Image (cartoon, rainbow, N blue to C red):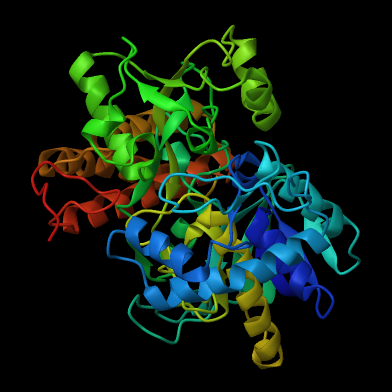
Length: 521
């Protein structure tokens, strides 16, 4: 089947949904997601969205906190633009129906998280992402110019390569004409042509055993852009959230929001001793990279599988009011956080690198825009400041929407694009091959490319990854496509990009720490 539209939007988190809403009054939009519209990284975001709203906070403070957290690798021009645009985008979210918590005087009930010098995080209890997701989904479903296709997986972007033209990575004339989309119910691959394609597929946490990301976070967007010869950067900067609930076997790991530490929670060893003061003067409110490494070190020193987060010294009623979901979740495991300490462990949470984009969200491939966690805008640098991600996503959705609409009439959809070639493929009978390679890939990344790295670990990771890469590519060439096969292929591609990026680092900076180069240049 061949379809043509103005905008093809791949992904239904805050970036994809807000972009769709911003352009749909002027153009037709096809919105695709490989699960349901509600299952996104955005929906799992607990803490909130950062923006300057009240004195004594100001844009310069937010900018400096962002730059400090980014450890010298932020693009200051980008950071300044994003923090300045954030307050207006908050107003847009409110117009779309998002209800942020307010205090008795009617002002926003702002939280503070690690790395922030002021209270500036807007939230809805401890399920902010879900509140945003629900409000945007309601608007999306009511819009007559947006067609939603659930259970559809983007396989590859369509470029001149599919017209028989050789495409090279460093060329500046690559164009995107749409994508091949797999209908997961029928296993048919559709040819979707579009004037502009927006990749907003979220994160890649499932490369690791322990992650706060939903099962759909498999690095699809980064892998697709890279295969299409687009530029990718800074993939070594994988952020591990310091505090996910220690509950072996649960996927995704339940996130214990950083706002809990902003509210006064203290990290402690299993014998009840505070330890963060040994690593940073800000204690439990240090930036995430410092806290995650500190917890990792304490666990290695003690041999314990987790540390504790203690909020029990705060009034019980306030804890339950501010963090009702965390309270209920822990209580289901017989942990009463008003009296008991919470067992926590770091978990893969966010990638600060990704597809390199300009200030309009456009990748090095013309007409291919990348938004949200799949993108590397320069805002986060070597380490993302807490709650800056939702802010970045909606600001860049706005900039991309304006840029797309300005150039829409220039974007011509070609007619000579071939449909998907099924030749030589058969049904995948040996699912065990996919399952085994998936497990091995996670083992490689978790054991060798985690919070602390070394040259030896990275070389072993690359050597072992090459074996499963060759096996998976051989399987891909012979098999009718399935979700699990496509996701495995994407994750192996992204794992390679992470390892190679880490090998190129000759220093420890931000989220990348290596035993061979422990100092920062």
